[in-house]
Image (cartoon, rainbow, N blue to C red; front, top):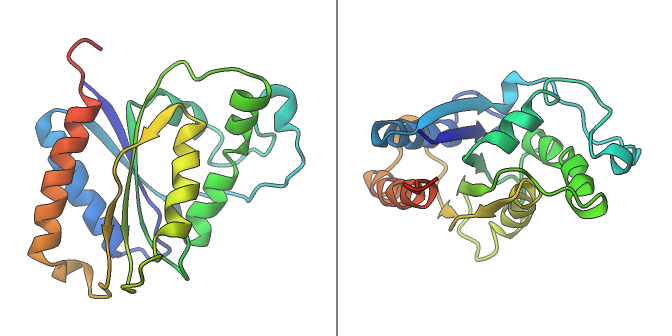
Length: 193
């Protein structure tokens, strides 16, 4: 059974990102995956201190709620981040978490310690804007968050121009999530692994 972690990256408790991720994880669970959802708002995470201590051992010296999650993320077969767009970028809470993965960047690219497992990463993002570049500031940090863990970014699922309430997410969004989730699961599931 594949282990998939979903991270809600919204700064709002009852958010569209949370609703979409719950729907996605429920579907993945029905396909046979073991799923877990982490809400960034439930974690006490400090930002990166840019002390560069991680370059010595490949570990962050800051101890908080993120500390035990490093290994959990590294051991997951897949991770999905579901996040809104704030000012053409990530919300501060999820960005602080991603910045702390500088430790894994140092581990992989300075100390040359490759992750023991590889996998895939998924991004689901929703924006109130319909701008052509509205997701540019979201995709790149998420891509490299996955890269330092040895995970490849799967085709992002992006929704523009929606500022409605979570209970009113359009049916066509849910249909797109169903298709994306099925393809994501197929990419995650390899019978020989």
